[in-house]
Amino acid sequence: MNLTKKFIGLFLLLILAVVFVGCNKTTTEAPTTQAPTTVAPTTQAPTTNGPTTDGPTTVAPTTGETTTTEDPGTNTVPQFVGLFPKQTVYKGATAYDILAGAKVIDAEDGELPILTAGAYSTTRVGTYEVYAYAQDSDGNVVTELITLTVKELSGFTIPTELTTDPISINLWHSNGASVETALLKYASEFMALYPNITVSIEKNGNNYDELRENMVNAIRGGSIPNIVQNYPDHVMEYIDNDGVIPLTPYIFNPTFGYDATDPDEAFLDILLSYRRENSQYTNDGEYYSVPFNKSTEVMIYNKTMFDILIADGIIDEVPNTWQGLFDVAPYLYEIKDDVIDGITAKLNLSTTTSVHKTPEEIQAIKDNFIPITYDSPANAFITLTRQWGGQYTGIDSARNGVILFDNDQTRAMLSYFFDNRDNPFTLPGKWGTEYASDAFKIGQTAVTFGSTGGARYNTPTVVNGEFVFEFGVMPMPYNADMPQNRTAIQQGTNMSITTAGTDQQKLASWLFLKYLTSKEVQLDFALTTGYSPVRYSVYDMPEYDQFRLGVNDLGNPLAGEDLMKSFAANAAAQQSDFLFYDQAFIGSSTARAEVEIAFERVILGSLEGTTKEDIIDDAIAAAVANSERVLA
Image (cartoon, rainbow, N blue to C red; front, side):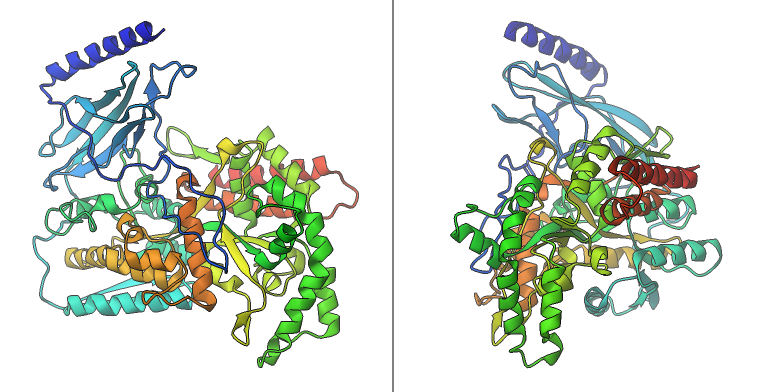
C-alpha cells in the first residue's frame, strides 16, 4: 500500500513539475507566520475563585477544501491552513505573495514546504491559476488550485498622499453606549494624529436591522455616510446596490496599506477566520469590509449551584455537553430553593432598594425557575443544527442563497430540544424578556448562553463587597454523540467604506478603519468592552494575558463587570478553534429571522391540539417558505 501511494504521489508530482517547468516558476517555501495549534482548547471555564491560565489558541479553523491521495485508513492527511483559493490584487499593489500566511501541516511530519506550479504577474491585468502542493514522508500529496485575479482600479483612485486641506467623514453605527463611547474616543485620538480630518460618529438605528434599512434607503435616494458598520449579509445588499467599494486596493497599497514588515500591524496579524469572513462576498475574493467588534457565544453559569453538586459528589466538574447539562438538571431543581433564598437574602441587604425582593417575589422566582436558558433563538437554531450534523444555508454557483435546513439532522435537533423544553431548557421569551440576564442574576436560571459582547449584563449584584453568588464562564457545550461537530458561532460586526465622498475622503475613511484595527486600539477595545481582539498580536500582549487571568495591569483582581468580561474573553479564546460563520447572501438576514421564529415555535409554542412532529414540521415548512419567498 505504501509503495502504491508513493508511486501515485510521485506521479502527481511529476505532472505538476511538468506544468511547473512549462510556466518557468520557481518553488516557494511556505511562510512561517501563524502556525496552527494542534491542541484542542480546554473546556473547563475560569471561575470566580480564579480563572484558568490557558492561553488563547491563535488560529481559527480552516474552511478550504483539500484533495489528497492518502488512504484515510492508514495515516494522517496533510492539510492546508490559511490558504485562500480565490484572491484578488490590484495593479501597483505592494509585493504580493499568494502563499502569504499559508502552511501545510502533517501530523507526523509537522510543517511541510509548499511548492507551486504556475506563474502570475501583479503588473498585468488578468486571471492566473497556480497550483500549490506538498508531499509528506509517506508519499501523500495535498494540492490546491489558487485563482488570482489582477485588476485595474476603477471608479475611484487612491491618492499618492493625504491632503493637508480639511476633510470631514462620518461613520454610521447602531451600538449601545459602551461601544459608542469607545468609537468617540478612538475618533478623538485619530483626529489628534490627523488634525485636518474630522470624524463624526453617528448612531443611525436602534439595532443593526434598522441601520441596514436606513443605509439601503439612503443608497437608493439620500445621503449615505463615508463608513458604515455592518454584518456580512448587509454588505451583500450594499454591494448589490452599488453602495460600498472594495477595500482590497487599500489593504495592499504600498503607501497606505497594512504594514507587512511589522508583524503586529500586518494584515496577516488579523485572525484568519475574520479575514475569510470579510473576503466571502465575491467569486474572486474581494475584501469589502474589515472586522471591528467581534464576539462569540459562551456558557455563563451559577458556580455556587454547581459547586454544591460537586461537593455532594453528584458531578466531578461542570458538564461541557448538552446531554451532561440536561442530566444534572434534576439536581439543580432540588437545590434551587435554598440557593434562591441565599441570593435574595443578600440582595435584601443591599443599600439599593430596587434589588430587594418581597416574599411573594421570591416565591415567584422559585416557581419560574428553569435551569438552562439560551438568549438567541436564531443562534440556537443555527449552531445546534451544525452540532447535530445538519446544514443551515449555502449559495449556488451564481452566489444566490440556498435554504438547506429542511433536513433530518435539523429535525433530530429540534426533537431533542423539544423533549427538554421547560424542563430543563427554555428561551427568555418564556418570561416575556429578550435576554436571560435578569433571570440569571436573581437565580431564576442556573445557566445562560449569550454573546461575549454582552456578557457583562449577567454579572451578579455586589452587596457589601461580594457577589450575591459565584459565577463561571466556559466554552459552549457540544453534542456528546457527535463531538466532531463541536462548534460555536462567530459573530460581531465589520466596517465598510461607501461610495460617498471624494477620493481624499475615502482615503481618510480607510486610515480611520486601519486605526480601528490597529494593535493598540484592539487591545483597548477588548479590555473596555469585552469584545474579542481581531489581531493575533493582542492575545500575546501581557496586558491581555493579565485581563484573561482576572487581574488588571497592576496585578490587582478585577471586580464587577470587568471580572465577567475577563472570564468571557478567556472562554472565547479557548473555543477559537471551533468557530464558524455562515456564507452571506442577499436574503440571509430573512433566513435568520425565520429560523428564530421556528425555534421559538418549537420551544415556546402551544402544545394544544397538535403533536411534536407537527410542530416541528410546521415550523420548518414556514421558515423555508418565507425564506425562499424573499430569495425568489
